[in-house]
Length: 146
Image (cartoon, rainbow, N blue to C red; front, top):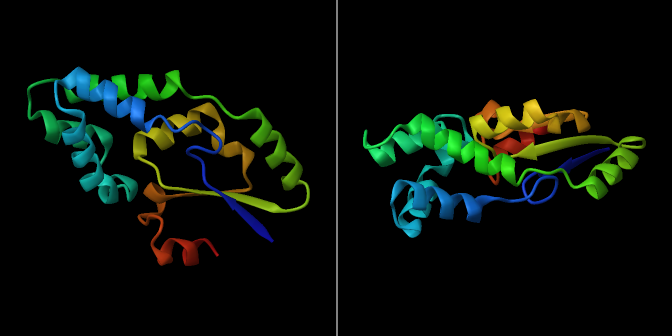
């Protein structure tokens, strides 16, 4: 038996609202407009066809340095990054009797940070949308993990 876990909002806090608010303020864009651009881009971000840097480049069109905005994005993500120790302990107990896997929609840059922080080492198997070129809730991602 394999037990699958999502990551955002379970193992690490969901910082989406804070990121939207702070990045919108930083680039001088209404938050609702930034959210619309993110929502439109999610299929490309989650399947690895676009990076966060690409998204910010398309939004600011040379008015600011997209790399600096990406650095701010990652900085905010890391500011609120913390592993839920209760959930990690629970996972470690489950791992003794079952195979565990994470299946997560994520962006390339966020996945890199999560690798560097050691988040994925807690699972027997790691399935990331950007590495698979698929995203939840598409059926194909689930059948690929089986």
